[in-house]
Image 1 (cartoon, rainbow over the protein chains, first blue to last red):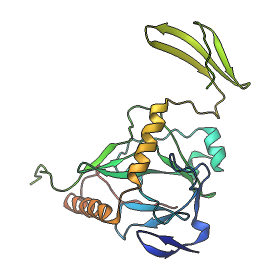
Image 2 (cartoon, rainbow over the protein chains, first blue to last red; image 1 turned 45 degrees about the horizontal axis):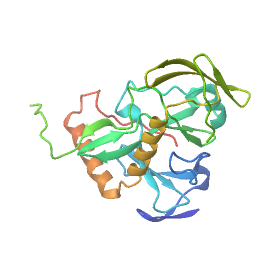
Image 3 (cartoon, rainbow over the protein chains, first blue to last red; image 1 turned 135 degrees about the horizontal axis):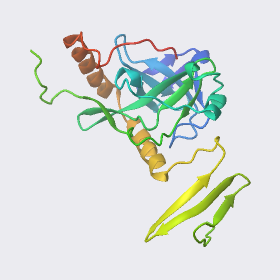
Image 4 (tube, one colour; image 1 turned 120 degrees about the vertical axis):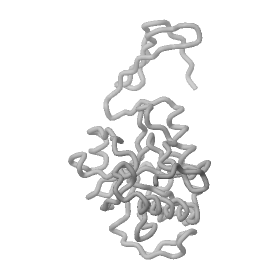
Length: 148
Length: 94
């Protein structure tokens, strides 16, 4: 199917690749359907693009690339909601933001997506180590320690 | 909004399955004990609000912003190929 996007123009996407967030994302309850668009060949990121609103898109990444110790406790009722038989059938993403010269990830509100059913949910974690603005890296413009 | 007065150790029922007990009252701080089925998530409202705000903010990131972030990440990776604690690529299914 063809979808309209404000960032990428008109894009042809496979309808079977749609991810449905039944409850929407927090603050965006009406928007349930998204597709993942590759940000580039070598990119560490994807765009989670709404198929219902051209302007609505989020940058997401695989948090394990940045924070290897990060674990999301997905509980049984949530697995059931996602139609996943086990935690192995769930892929975790976090929403990425650019803030004050930093690249930050929302590790407190991860997105979990069932790989087969393609159902998603934004979780709310109580673990206070993981905030909504965990620095993933410092962006250019700041002095970096040389590693000669 | 329904407003109820409760004393220490008294409980409020919400539906048949959610119990909220006043565990302790000290000054302006009240400690609550909450019993709910596992399917019902219980969180501090501030956490929800923080995630909601962050979502709204992250929805404003544009293609140029990501391009900057991505380019630098790839540069860093090339510069330090042996390092394992930085980002490394992995395929993602969805």
